[in-house]
Length: 330
Image (tube, rainbow, N blue to C red; front, side):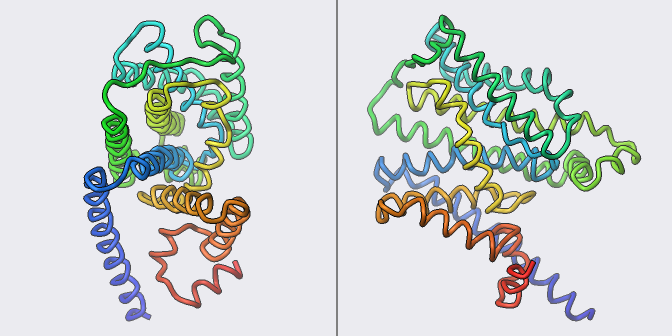
């Protein structure tokens, strides 16, 4: 028994080292991609980075804290419209509007987070969906400020197309690296342990003296801030936004699928999930045009059946045929 546990522990240590080395190699490779990849592939990778940020943001509030924020896309929309309104109405610089978008998302979370976070489970999930729809309706009726259904056309980024592609590539890549680092710090800090205790048993966490309201709100604020950054970058990147596009629940669903496939409560799981779903989707669109939705759905179903906890937990549990059979039975 002791020998068996020792082998499992050795494998876990080897797996962690392998994952760390793989992540470092992948990071260096992605940093060098603009040197040899075409603008088309850089745009695909930048889009993956954006969804990786959104999936990781969901991971912070859902995977670590246990609150399923299905309406987290509301912060994507708020970030996008903060950038759009400030750039169009006040001619503010892009990075100033990004900071403004973060502030708007944080204030929104402070105003609505404390009352909404009193709800749990599917009640909380439904409340976040309601927040998203209500915010979209408000933005849709502020015609003079937001352009409502007509949308907002943002100023074009200066420079050539290739330069702009590389600019957004590195902005999103840097933000993705930052949220990975923040998630890592969260996972090893007292804050992270408090969040995980809330996820495990909130009442027990309260009885241990943990201020659950404080930690839940802080976790949602971190998640909201990064989602707002992604929305701000998206708005300037696309140069046009409308409520139906940036408050779209399809974005939230896609991000949730990536988060779950990669592995809830893991550091790089949502990132792996984002790369898997987006690259698979690109392949399906390119080579299986008439069957792309069916192909994508079939692959995701198979992953859920054979790896229900996601890619990263499955990796740490050690790949083997018995483990696959066990997952299918469970």
